[in-house]
Length: 499
Image 1 (cartoon, helix red, strand yellow):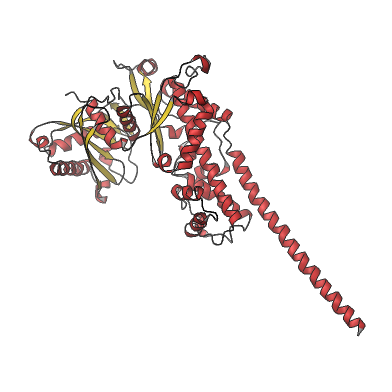
Image 2 (spheres, rainbow, N blue to C red):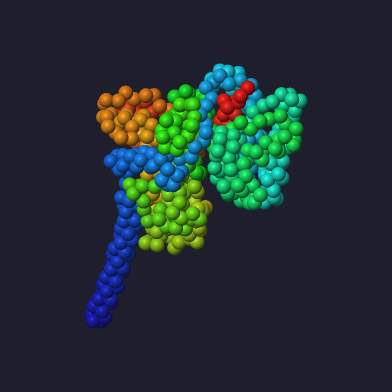
């Protein structure tokens, strides 16, 4: 009997040891999984590091690339395109002016009425209309006849019958497709994008095509300005504040333009002009420098994109891509550990996590991060995520967003450095900051990434102050504009009118 009791006791002890060993083993295993996930995060944070020193290198690189792009075509990844906009609205414009914006599967018709007082727009009417699918692959005449007919109907609704009777009006045309501009009111279409494929338009002057359509519809309207949305933002910003010298779009896509001294353009390109400045369309999404903090996730995203080795800067800073970078990091963590469950097929879907959803997770202030959990569940199919994993996701969003915003700040200051408005005396940097009196400098900003994403905006402004110093940063003002592609185009039509 005694031997039986002893045997049972031994068996119980063995089982207890096995159970205890299993518990310890699982704890060790879980700690190992957690360490692997944390390592992924730490590597991301290190690779995305944007110290002030590194940002200043990006500032210098941007200024140098701008100079090289102006000096010769193809001299830089920055296109530095001449816009021939050398007469910005100054608030003295009067009358009714129109704008068309063709930027995708929709186009907009817009009118403004001005009375000569800066920032006073008496009326602002706008209508958004879809482009019928068949017209996206039809002929140029069919497309522009439809647009001209829509403009005529818009004018009829607004009771501007004098345009139909004989009173002439001017129109600004925002055309968001690759175009080689030859004057303020003319430009040749290089290629279609965004689903358009109208072969007889390629190589033709898009303004001439629109003007002919307007004439066929009996509209006494003259196209006086052909622009892109960034130039329109600059025009609207300058109309509201005469110290506006540059504009940046920070939304789904990104671009920048600024006012260059014409003596610099004449020296570089032999351009003849009597004005003291011209707006330059930088196409800064294609900027690249070895100083940019690129990660393995950026490299993979670029490789998987339809345009590898192109638009490198845009892929690190714009709303089109930030959410997908975050998704790629979470995917890597799920491969390292089961902290996000057994995985989800949706997590492998490119661009399933949009930047607005990423921003919601980043700015989730609930104690249990319930919005993070909801988005992971509903969008990525990740169920039952523990709180510590949700906190990791917020840190990923913070890292990716902070890098993007600080790089945008460096890009803006690169523009100001090229203009001699960063307090260093210009691109050569001959004088010290203390020796230069900073001018009040306004940069017009448009785009939902800046206006709607609070943390992005705060990171950007913080970086401006860190790079410039508090005293100089007070002189640089980022001013939000709304609808530069519409109102700005109409204002440029007014400022370039010969009436």
